Amino acid sequence: MMRASRSVLNAALRRTTTGTAAATSPSACLANALVAPSSPSAEMVAAGSPNPSPIPAAKLFLQQFRFKSTAPLDHDEEEEAALDAALNLDADGSGAGSEMSNNTLESVADYTSDKSKSGTPSPWAVFDAWGAGADIFDQLSADEEYKLSKDSVAIPFTDDERAGMPDETSILGAYDHLLKRKSSVHFGYPYNLMYNHEELYEFMKYSINNLGDPYITSNYGVHSRQFECSVIDFFARLWKIEPDEYWGYVTTCGTEGNLHGILLARECHPDGILYTSKESHYSVLKAARYYRMEARAIQTLATGEIDYDSLSAEIEKNLDKPVIINVNIGTTVKGAVDDLDRILRVLSQLGVSRDRFHIHCDGALFAMMMPFVDFAPEVSFRKPIDSIAVSGHKMLGCPMPCGIALSRKEHVKKVEQRIDYLNSVDTTIMGSRNGQAALYLWYSLRKKGIAGIKRDVTHCIDTARYLRKVLHGAGFTCRLNDLSSTVVLERPMDDTLVKRWQLACEEDIAHVVVMPNVTRDKIDRFVEELVEARETHGRMEPVREDSPLSKLMCSSWGGETHMPKNG
Image (cartoon, rainbow, N blue to C red; front, side, top):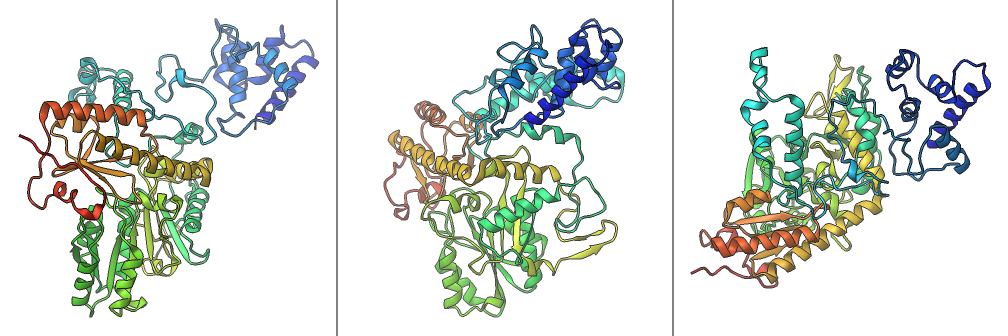
């Protein structure tokens, strides 16, 4: 792409230097050659702008061909030197006393990037999106807090109302600082903040809508179906299902994936009973309520896995009805992975035939990680499962919530309806669907690749073990499930610390989900603050005999832990 753009520039230079004396200087010739007659820059030159520099115009032209990319550039050094000389560029790539024009008015602040962090992207196209590294941003000033108050961000109806309010640019500046601050102390929720999608910013100006079925194009042409189908193909290969046997789509989040998977289960088995553990994500039982399904919440082991004996006993009571099971590939709070093979053995032992059971796998976080963990049990369509849902913004990292739903194609036929208005079929939960999400997921997968995803997963697993070690060394009660990057610990008594680090809590426990943006330096800082809070506020004691904190002491976890003893 760079070679192509420089070739066009050189051709333009040749045209200006070989033609008649149409311009008074080489730089003016270059400006005339590069700037379209109808562009703002051309009008500035023609009108005798106070600063009719040809350099911004040339660079604006160059930007039409040059896209931010992590791919190595194949360039000709002599050609590049000649071009830089023509553009009057210094050795560092900047113009003499000028800055690269981004075609943005000076009055519009740039909140999309930090100029001090500019540089060549890494081969994995990741950078600290205000969440990685050891830096923690300062708290907002009183003025910034005011700018984000309800009164300041209210939408005025009259000019008089607007007169007493901060302007939009200053409000956005305060909001940018807030997001940097919150992202730099982000520990409790499974969102990967390590990503770089700068190359896609240009596409945010389009209303990309993948309405309808991903495989049947509607009359609406501004879509990203080709990228969506590529994403689905990737996960189909990852979870080992044959090309002609699967169907899927990019969802708004993991919850939508669960809603879709359980809807298919209900359509396949209208009188079936949904079985899921009590530590499943809330969206699973929400689906049962939405679809008016009979459901059973099964007890769990101390580690958070489903209690297999309880599951077997409950199914045995209802063998006259089909079995629908939600298998957790990582529970919400403890990161526990239900043993799919053991669940299949339960069904076999009870004599439940394949046509009488339906298995959905909620893999919001870990279904994306598990295939990259050495010696992990396999969760794939080579086993008798029917659907998997995973979040896209969690392990991969994405600026908007999204996910992937993948299921066996035969099941989707039961919900498919032809919609003439769309010139497509209705197979998804949502009608209009965010085409940007499919594009961002495709980009992340292409840039990271298999090796990049494995590197991220390894970082999460290893860093979670480091966090457990440091917490244990500091005398805190903590646990880490096998196959997980979620460290469960006693809930801090200081609620300010809980909110500062955005810890997710359940009664007397909290957890940290180690993602690619969580570093050891930041963990050390976190544990230091935990120790300080313990010295000031004391330690959380179990709120009852069978509370979540009490269960952290169960021997089924293995290893040792430190039980709080106040007083």
